[in-house]
Structure formats: C-alpha cells, structure tokens
Image: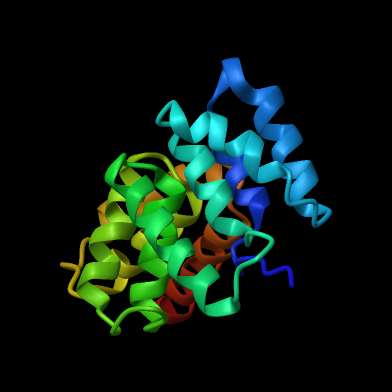
Amino acid sequence: MFYKSPFDDALLMKQVNISPDKDIFLKALELLDHGIFEGHKLLDELIANSNSDALVASALFSLETETKEEFDQRHIHLLINASEQNNPLALYSLGVYFDIGEFFQEDKKQAMKLFKQSAELNMPQAMYVYGVMIYYGTGGAIQDKKLALKYLNDAVSMDSEQAKDFLEFIKEELNLCQH
C-alpha cells in the first residue's frame, strides 16, 4: 500500500535549498510522487549527509512495506528530527499537528512556538499563521498588530495568497469600523 502525508510536497519544493544535490532530490520526489519506492534510496543518500529537506521529503511518503500506523510513526519521527535541524517545513508541519491535535495532544502554545520558529526561518505559510495568531492574540501569543502586519506583509512578498486575503479582510474590517 502507498501512503502519502497530507502535506503538499509543493511546499517542500518552495523551501528546498540543497543546490549541490538538487537533481538527486528532484528525481527522488518524482519517483515517490509516482509511487515508485526507489525514490527513498536516493533520499537516504542525502539523509546520510544530514540533509533536513531529504528527511522531510522521506517523511511525506511511505516505505513499500509500511502499514499506515508504521508510516505515521516514521512520519512524525522524521519531522521531529528535521525540526531539530531547524527545517522550516518540519517546524511548520509539527505546528499544524499541535494546533489541530493530530498525532499529539492539542497544544496551541506549542503550535504557536513552532509557527514562530518556522516564520523566523522565512516559511510563508508559517508567517501567515503566526501573523494571524499575534494579530488576534490567540494560541498564547501576545497581541501585537504591528508585528503581525510585518509577518503578513513578508508572507505576501513571498506570494502567500492566504496572507494577501487576510490583509484584505482586515482592511475591510477596519473600514467597516470607521463608518
């Protein structure tokens, strides 16, 4: 059976920064996207060289003989390992899991910390989520609208449609309050 993480590997492609090994990395993802498990062998070479992007990529796709439960356990284990290397996508992914209570007990404060770490490493999705959290002061974040706007505008500059839409929403909200 073939299992794939709910996280879109397109997010990984936007974040990946492994210039010397990029061809190997892209070939591995192409194989895995087509359900060809040999892609893991290519990622294993990169993982042996402490490549955190390869850890995240490996976490997105099951091994050939894994059950769903084994895949889920390996998925989380690899994301934790990559997050310990400050991989922005791993931090963001774990933040999502803590935020929604999947794989971990729901913990909004832990989610906020992970989103902040990822945002500080220029992950646009994390900039958006963390920006919204500090805009409203949710998840244990201290409300800081000025800082929130900085994160949101930075996310927009990195092509985050969600951040752009949110900024439009709050602009409309402010206009309604002024009338």
